[in-house]
Amino acid sequence: MKNIKLLKKCQIVLFFLLCNVALHGQTTNDLDIKNGFKIFILGSSLENYKQYDNGLQVGATKYITIKNTEHNKIGDIFIDYIKLEFTQNKLVSIQVSMNYKYRTDIYDILKEAYGLPNIKAYDEHHEYDVNTGKLAWIATQAEWAGNNVSLKLWGDGSFGDNSNITLTFTSKDAAKIIENQKNNSIKKASKEL
Image (cartoon, rainbow, N blue to C red; front, side, top):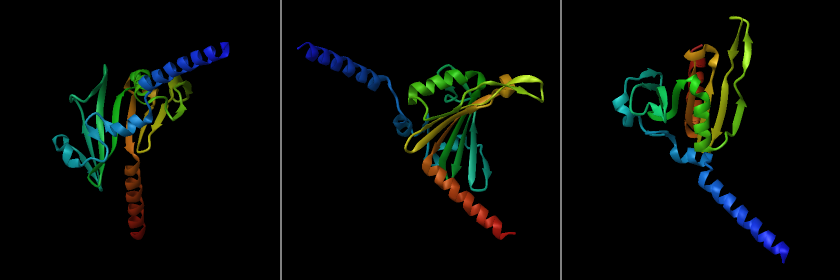
């Protein structure tokens, strides 16, 4: 009888723990559901962003850089710029760049939104820079990979306050498009030899 009561208490505690995780624990599924950053949706048409069209065309790829809009803030963190990359008139990549000093804050925000990263390649640390004779910050990198969308957090703090940390949202379908486009460009260029 005593064991049954203990088992029921354990089940109740386990139930509440699981409910707490379900309520507060985010996953990379949320990354797939959001499918982008703020109003910028991966796979959407270039036509949707004509109001920002001050872009640079490089071959079949168009880049649009957005500064100083209502979208240039995450909580209290100011975003330096948002760069959109379009291939075949589809949004395939979103880069969000901010000052490197926000690296810990943005990492914590991403953990809250998407859970722990799937890959954390390395943490920041100091290393002696033979060129300057000083200790230099070394890059921070983490990656969250959903089924359809990947998010990379990367940055190099070696330039101190002039360094940036960048979030890059990429659709896996877009990666295939970019790879095919690259292969076609290589084949075309090789025929010109």
